[in-house]
Length: 133
Ligand code: CO
View (tube, rainbow, N blue to C red):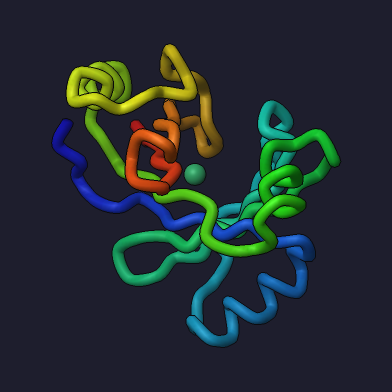
């Protein structure tokens, strides 16, 4: 797996509007993308910061994995998205290198991306998302 860059750093928040107000102010960043991702039970906002994004994630349903995350660990850093050329190949490489996948196969993400997540228990505590544009 050879990531091209860090695509985004995701922060789980309870109140999306307050988080947007705060982060657009301190970063001087504009909202570049906003989307409801039904399959993950979240609304996400991407703020462009230098060559990457800060992604604000807010649960839209109590059963969302992000809602459960916030309930258990509070708001905060949720995952890191690594940009890869080919999600399927990167996932296979990661598994070959000893990572445990949450997604057995790449699946549709936001922005028309293809994504797969690696389990934090196999990555020294970081939820990693492989992102193919
Ligand atoms: Co992400």
